[in-house]
Amino acid sequence: MPGYYLLQGLLKYFRNKESGIYSQEQGDTVIGGRTLLQITQLLDDYRINGLYVRRIKEQTINIGKVNWSRTIARSTAFPSNGSPVYLDLSTSRSRYMANCETAKIHAQVIRELLINYGKLLFNTPNIIDEHLLRLEAPIGDKRSQIAYLERELCLSYYERDIFLIKGLIKYLRLKKGTEVSDVLIGVRKFHTLWETMLDECLVGKYSVNKKLPIPVYRTIKDNFVTMAQKGQRTDTVLKHKKYKLFAVVDAKYYEARSPQTAPGWADLVKQFYYQKAVSQLEGEDAVISNHFIFPGKEAFLKSAHVAERENQYNQKWIVCQSIHRSIVIIKIP
Figure 1 (cartoon, rainbow, N blue to C red):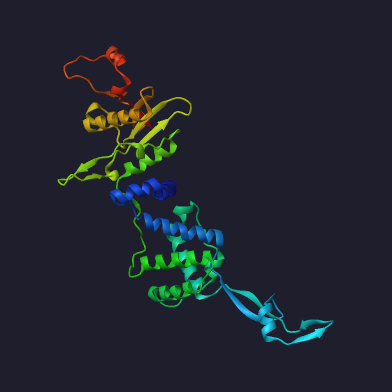
Figure 2: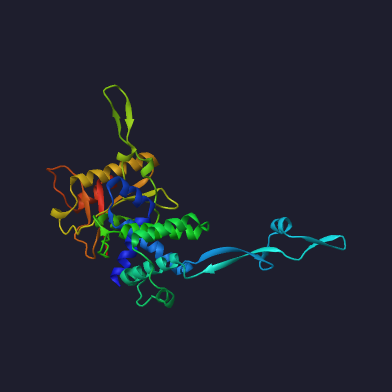
């Protein structure tokens, strides 16, 4: 189902560390990304651990685990063969409540998520089981449910319980005061997702952005300020495992069906400059090729070049050109 794969792609993109850093610098590129992440975390937790169960530890006598310090302090010992014997042992045991108020809130949230997003997120219908249908609705509105969960959180000490209750509180706060159940999820600029998809698929990814030069600004007081966040940022650089072969790749999300719709001067200069920067890092013996990648099946252009304005250009001229003055154009369906 297309919707399932699209949501999985958006979720993977949003979870990617480098994409998250880019989003913080450029503004959120994924609309509803945090909501999508929260929904999937709650559903994944339910699929792994099931509904919330409250653990209650109660004091007992002769049933459960013996608490020897409490037994010695509160029980009378009887001598037997020179050793004390305790007839009444102070013990404790854990009891589990599967129908507490927190479990009801949890079931209500999971039912709502599965109805609205289950088919899109799991690509399968009818995934609501009898455990969710058996529990009745919780008491009160979302505000009172949040207050109850906050009180329950103070009494919880298991890692899973804390994670789950915090997630439920965040979700209910998000839904509080809204009557519309729909959530808008998407991307503002799909080319950022396209770049990340290619970056994951291409073999030999080489992390070079942190090694590239950055701008330094000189103030009127002769102070020098570096701005790493404004430095060069390549889409993808590939490196051969054995040889000093590199490829600087720029992913474009349009068809480039003709020279008129091909990348402009700014894109060409940027790619040549990236190529030169990588060459300075890796040495003159490194062979560095340049590539534009576009979506599509049919290629309309082979390569892009920079040359003198008055020259005549043909196949012979192309062959004579240095690799440092050409960019190969590739189509990927």
